[in-house]
Image 1 (tube, one colour):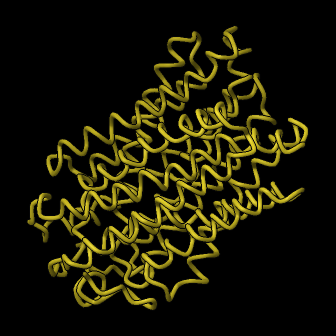
Image 2 (image 1 turned 90 degrees about the vertical axis):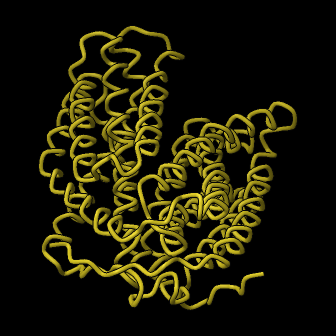
Length: 410
């Protein structure tokens, strides 16, 4: 059995500046790429959340039923998954710089289409195009910034994902303010914001500089990939099931429907804040220990939701706790094996599968038990995540990553 990771820093063979490609955050090229990636994340969060929050106004705009108004979100998600799968299958044949550029253009065109589509079928097509661009951006931006910043790896990727969370908070606010007549303007503004975000294409060079030094076949790291896939799959279950069923639980606990819906914003706000605060507070912890602590804290938060009158606070704590898990898991993965968009696509597909699976499973539990059992069911998922983390630590600890040669971005 592999020795446990240090509780202060990651072990030198898998993540130290001596063996890892390291970029200076003060480098003008890296700063520009990072700024572009942050703008991308902000717009992506806004559009993704806006698409769901605007469903009632979409139904009014096109004269469709309430059930059909949620279809754009499904099409958007399907487009995202297709891109992730295609990029993963294509492997190194996909040029990261070109892929980021193409993904951003697809996202911009699709977003603009959401604003101007005159008929329902074109609106759905635009959602699919935007989703395809979204999937590519999520894949390549997270891969690009998952390593290379030394002790700042965890913080950099968490800050990027926190910006996404800010956009996700702004989306519903924009929907409630703009309503039916102004949504086109919001989508158009988001599309225009993609133009300056094109500087994010430089992020692809960070991936290329690492790929040039890594030749080990993926099958060499298959046990590690399986372990991380389990972590991503079950973690996604915590986030998606909580987001999907929080308001249902709060209504069952006695909160008015409108109030319960408003309280769900606390969960998402907590998630964004957690991605900033927790990595700063726990910057001396290894990624594995940080993730383990966050999962344990989220289970405490879910326990608090079952106390009388503390449901909203408990969900806010849960969001705060799980916020850093997704980006920090990417950093941990980058320390355990070579980072490539092929491996990242496998892990993102696992997360997307978790997003699709666990809300439905919890729904079955609700129909068979009670909405008040929702936190207990999600706590069970959390226990499985902890087991997956330990499994991944064992298999990754036994397979130290090969040394990577330092390369200049220029």
